[in-house]
Length: 366
Image (tube, rainbow, N blue to C red):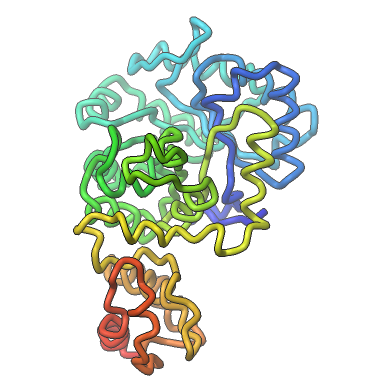
């Protein structure tokens, strides 16, 4: 397992987490076994936005039974409720309080690692959550130590940016995949520039991103349903999400151990199986000339990490002081480019990297 550091707090979070949207279809025994398998393989981040009530007790039994509560992180949503046994969405504070209390009981815990404002997709949702007292309630629970971090789930870049303006978030759950980034599908909200600006802003401000819908609800895995007319693999989708700035963990939903075992193969897969450069042939015009940090241009004859150099440059321009320092500690800098043209010829997104290296070297002075 690989881990990334949450800037606001320093927790080490597994880059592959577990979503609970589909696992409720399995038996209690299978759900507990799936969570146990996740723990055995180093997964320590669990999102509890479930399609139904069933997973909560199973997660609680598996994690408390293994004595692992202090080793894992629960992402619990203030606005999701399960009183009918199925998922419901609410902005009513009293209903939220009852639902959160029920979730804590089922999960056998008395604290929440990440308390999330749930599904804030409209500015009106955010206004109502504030007026209803949900945000005050979350902040009070954080002062009490019941909630360790405050987050929010959203599909809308403009709304996420509004909440970032208020300095509320430690973590943002956002829908990231190439279909949505290229404005394909129901949740493909905001243009590529706006979405990338959101990811870079999160990294620059130390707000982690947990990724939902990495497979676009399975559409990207099926050529007949894919908006690109071609199928991507789960590994390509995972790598794409993990390459976006600010991303700490990706949270695919699984139905059982078989699904989880298939995802865990990502860490042993060669780079060729994780390479999503095929997107260069179907990317919209807006994506032309935009470095996606895929490093399909590698290897560089002089050893430049072209993707990382581009990422640090983009982040530094957003005001990320750490990105500037990270760039300076690289073994090779943009100024070392010998303009051989290898990267330009291989870039699937038609980025003029030689010209870009000159620009970056001039900006950093190195």
